[in-house]
Structures are given as structure tokens and as C-alpha cells.
Length: 98
Image 1 (cartoon, rainbow, N blue to C red):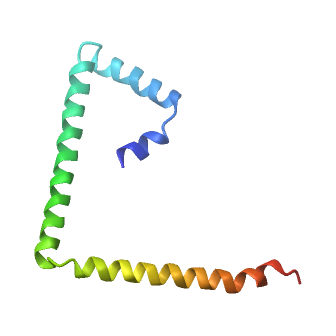
Image 2 (image 1 turned 180 degrees about the vertical axis):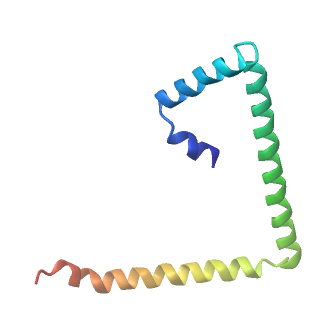
Image 3 (image 1 turned 180 degrees about the horizontal axis):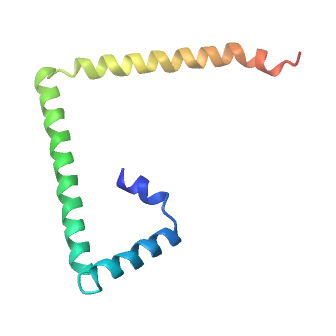
């Protein structure tokens, strides 16, 4: 999510943010602030990874045989096959001009 946000920030925006940061905090505080932000992001990433692991572990405990995952894969395959059949049936109709 954070990386997606960074993708929309251009060079001018980054320069402006850095300039304002230096004005507000001073050049001596910038490394300390960046270090704190990095530690915070790392802690958040570790927390989300832990939550994902716990969810996956609980899902495995509920359904140890993986029957839910198998059923989900079968449904996804059926949907893909249905889309393919519809595209094959509608394809010639789309190509004809009225």
C-alpha cells in the first residue's frame, strides 16, 4: 500500500517534502526522523506478516485437509471455463458488423 502511494509521487513532490522537512525539523533531526519512520514501517510489516500467518494457521486448523482450498480452486476453474466458453461463443458475434 505504501509503495503504491509512492508510485504517484513525482520528483517535485519529493523535493518539496524534503525541503519542508528540513525547514521544520532542521538538518540534524532528519536522519533521526527517517530512522524512526523506517523502524515504524518495519514493525508494521512484521505485524501484518504475523497476522497473515495466524489467519493461515487458523484456516489450516479449521480445515486440515484443505477441502476449502480445493473447492475454491474448482470454482475458480469453472468460472474460467465459463468465461472461455462465453468468449468463444460471443467472439464471432463481436466481429460481425451491422
